[in-house]
Image (cartoon, helix red, strand yellow):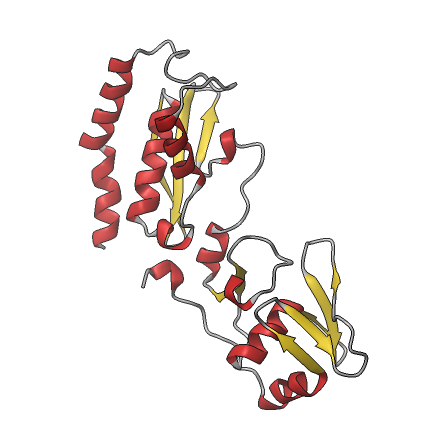
Amino acid sequence: MSKLLITDKSFITDKQIYNAFHEKYICLPDIGLLISKETLTLVGALNDDGYIKTSFKEKSFGVHQIIFCMFHGYIPKIIDHINRNRADNRIENLREISATGNMINKDVNKKKPLGIKGVNWERNDKRWRVTIRYNNKLVHIGSFKNFLNAVRARHYAEHQFGYDEYDIVSAAQKYLMWIGKFSFSTNIKLEEENKYNKDSIKNEWDFFLLTKKQKIDNLIKK
């Protein structure tokens, strides 16, 4: 199992709370719903953060926490919604996860180019800077004149650091699959629009393989 998937210390639920959940609610884990045994109505309301929340013994709980507990018998420190839909509380969409893993699976900033994490345009240097988090540290992968190479580097680091075990198809991977199948134009200058020809793109990538790639590989060995 990837280090990213090793969870923090779980909150083992008090047996009385676990029993109280079962006394008060009917849990339908396959469809992610809770029903009140008293009123036979759905439990919870959608809050501004996208979670379905309810009150239990004067404390606020996410419905996902209650469903996870009623199914597994405890409440983890962090429960992740695999498909990033916080209102989808099907048990197959809930998993215990580390803080690092939870951070990886967050929605990307819509302002980022094509929604690709860790790829940022540096105005002063006029290059694409690539970073990634590993073992709670921000790792600088390199900087590139060509956007395609920046995405390639990000995807390589994601694969080496085990991100694809968690975020199965990342934005970087989707982009590479997309550009491999179609010839298209976006507001980002890509190959045919770029002033750098294909040879310079290849040369830049070859330079990365000879230099920065080793830095990533060495981190894995530690």
